[in-house]
Amino acid sequence: LVPLLDSLSFGRYVFKQVPILADLILYPLAPILSVYRGVPFFAFGVFLALYILVARNATTFSRFVRFNTQQALTLDIALIIPQLFSAFGQGIPSQITENLSTSLFYAMLLIVAYTVSSNIRGITPNEIPVVSDSVEAQIGPF
Image (cartoon, rainbow, N blue to C red; front, side, top):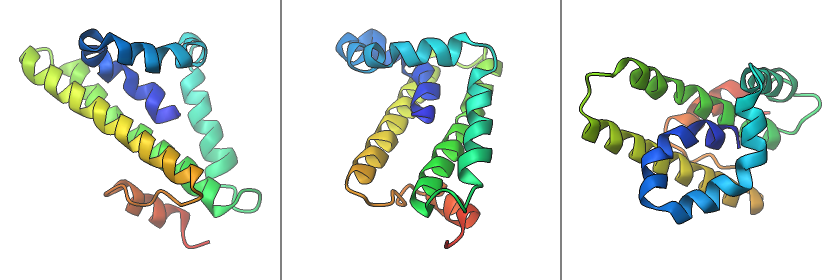
């Protein structure tokens, strides 16, 4: 859920062109999103809490839960890079910005759909290129 909340800003062009998608995604997430973005440093606090209390707590949580949490946090960190480029990329043509933002949003939407469907089936979602390998290395075999 954390990567999806942080990737919604990249979907602004998609939501303009496909308003029904905005209704399907933004409406159910509106209460969570208002707190997540409305309270200063709340997103950072959620990030730290998930990392300290779940991802690094091998005694309390199963590997499955820790893997999913670490993967969500890794995806969230990966979203920082395009956010930095969008902040400093004022000279980039709007068509390129729109295409990159839309692609990134769809990629995150597909990743979230894949992880949710894998979790519902009880399968570890470890097929995301680069990200899953990084998480495997951080979590370890146990």
